[in-house]
Image (cartoon, rainbow, N blue to C red; front, side):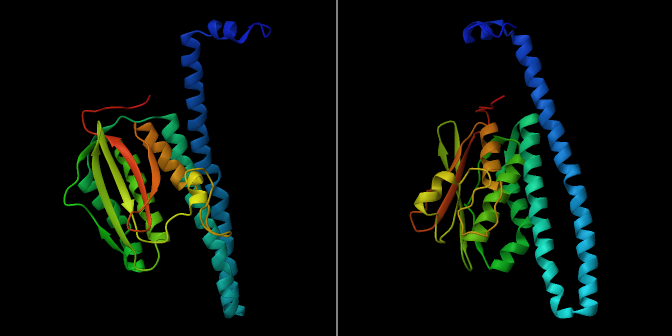
Length: 252
């Protein structure tokens, strides 16, 4: 292709078949990255954990009071494993978009709450659900990831003995779902960065992750959008939308 041609002429020379091949190549690259992330990054972390366990055993034997120093190492490894999992989810989702299906939200949310049961008990949280849930058109495992992250986020940041309210309302061609709490809310100056990768709304030294940015990507791939709004009763509300069953707005 002649590099001196105007941009419009260059674009005209690119055929649909070439675009399809390039799209397939990029998806293949993402799939490869997803596999590498899962395997190549987890392997050295296993070595770190084994060495850390050995060090902790030595400390317990010689200096029991110092054994707790190894805890920060294991906490850092856990955080890395969490980030690796989030990166793998978003790369796989972008590389291989899945077919949406009819999802019974009552069953799905119940499963997520069961997964988070230990955290709910530890924080003495109260989780309030609506009397009924609608059916939506979504990818079940992506939707499970979305609910898990929004609920885990509320459990972590809504204060002591939080009250977390799950709500939904009908919208044009679909529904809007909310996870609301009565904690301190999110400062206005950082709300625009909530869904940016590796951004944190908390103080320096707090965990930084991809949770909300992955949520945004998964919602977008299913034809919806997500965001944040202050709770009218005080606190935070994170929301996302999805098309109703029969209103397939999937973005290929």
